[in-house]
Image (cartoon, rainbow, N blue to C red; front, side):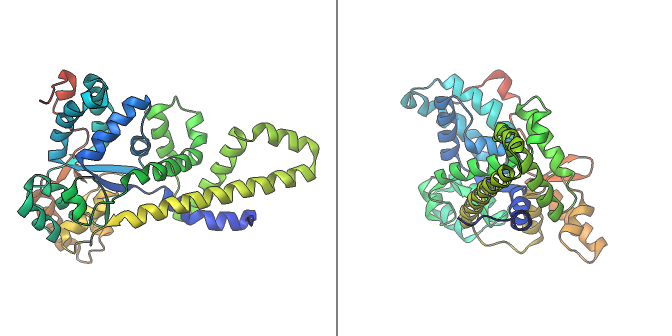
Length: 346
C-alpha cells in the first residue's frame, strides 16, 4: 500500500473529515427500531446506530405512528426473543426516544410512492411521506410495502458497519475533548463543542487530522512513540511511516462507509418551498430562524422569502418552533410523560 506523505494526507483527509462531521438524516421505521432495541438488550451494550445518533452523526426521524407502534411491537416480540419486556421498554423510553425526532406528517405533499402505498395499506404511508419530504434520504425499513417502493435500503443492517466506522472516526477527532469530560452524553456534547469551533471546511479538515494524529499516537501508540523517540531519528521516521499506513487505511475505511451511505440515499428531491425548508432543517446542526433559512435557501427577495417561510412553517405540523423564533423538523424526545409511568402498549 502506498503511504501518503503528511501534506498529501492532510489534503486527502480534509474532504473526508468535513463530510464526517455533517449530520446525516435517516428515516426510521418500526421493524428495524424494534430489532435494534432487542439486539441492544441482548448484547448489553448500545447498538452502532444508537451510538451514531448519540454522537450527533446520524439524526433519526420517524413518522408519528412509529412512536406508537414500537412499544406495541416490543411487547409482542419480547417473549419470542426471550428478553424482558420491561427492559426493552426502559431502553426505548430512556435511550431511543430522546434521540429520535418524531414528525407529524399531516398535510405533507404526497409522492407517487406514497399514493401507491395508500391504495394498498395506509398504515405505513406516513413513512413514505416523510421520506419524500427530505429526499434523497436513507430509509431504514424492513416492511415489505415500504421496501417495494424502492426507497428503503434493502440491506439496512450494513449500516452497523457504516455506523461503527463513522463513530470511530468521530471519537478519534474529538478525543482531546473527550479525555477532559466525564464520558457518556457529556463526552458527546464536549466533542460537538470542539467541532463548532472549526470555522471553515478546510479548517475542520486540518484540525480534525491534527486531533486524529494526537489521539491515535497518544492512545494507541503512546508507548511505542516514546520508545522510538528515545532511539533516535531512524526510529522516528519508521514510526511516522507506520502512522501514515494506519491513517491511509483509516481514510479508506471512512471512504467506503461514506460510499455505502450515499448509495443508500433514495428518492428525488422536491422543488417546493416546503421540501426545500425540510431538507435544510433535516441536517441543520441547530434550529434555525427564518432569516437563516432565507440565506440558506438563497432567496433573493428577503421580504417575499420571509413571507413564504412564515406560511410554510406555520402551515405544516412537521415544523416545530422550539425556542423564540427558531424552527426544526420534528419534535425531540416525544414521550408525553409516558416514560415516567412506563405505560405499556397492549
